[in-house]
Image 1 (cartoon, rainbow over the protein chains, first blue to last red):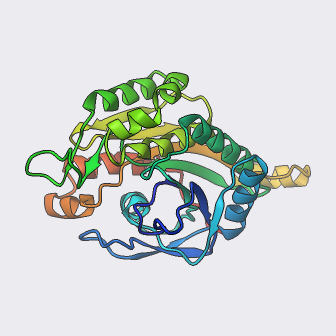
Image 2 (image 1 turned 90 degrees about the horizontal axis):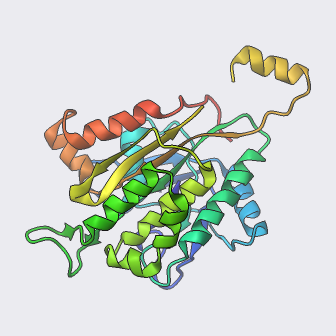
Length: 226
Length: 64
């Protein structure tokens, strides 16, 4: 799962642009969202180490983290999608909140490298690649909506992202996902980079669907072909 | 791959490799577990996650 930590796993004293969680298990959430337990989430340590090695060999200096926990950005989707926690999950962290952000092109290429690494793994695993995050969202910042603790500063951008995803215009999506645009879309707008990395991993494919939830500036996307 | 196909592949000496079978884009709003518990399985968020869950490949019995 490509993910952006909210300064809960990492902090400003040590904030990698890219990092892979390499361990047998990890726990989450570590930031106490309401009405969900703290899970022990299984991982795949050998495959995680392989993905990190392949990423470094492909030119992406991915940091290593062990004995880590994750925040809601990984735990909340898993709470709904794999609540039994019986599917190994490998977190691949992308720094999408604190500028300077990695470029969209680089995140797409990172996803491609991860895709190649998975395809080279000599075990008959079926792998789903996930990208976690919003397209336009401001959390606890000056662009919050009145009476809320968040807001959607750039709904037009969120709709444009969805259009590009639906029409497989990935080159346009990457070209338009500049750091300026991502930050204009909100203080967590860089989370789109996780979706872009996921797209790199799965290759050029048409989505089954993209379901927007525009009051939150995000969507639910599925690409399923096998 | 089915068990019989896998056995035949092994018999032919074909190496079994990992395969990406799906991609998902997911939100992660931290208050969603609370909303879904409060509003029930027919609320919008519960339905949207349930639709994604239906598309997940079934889990394999082993992990490393």
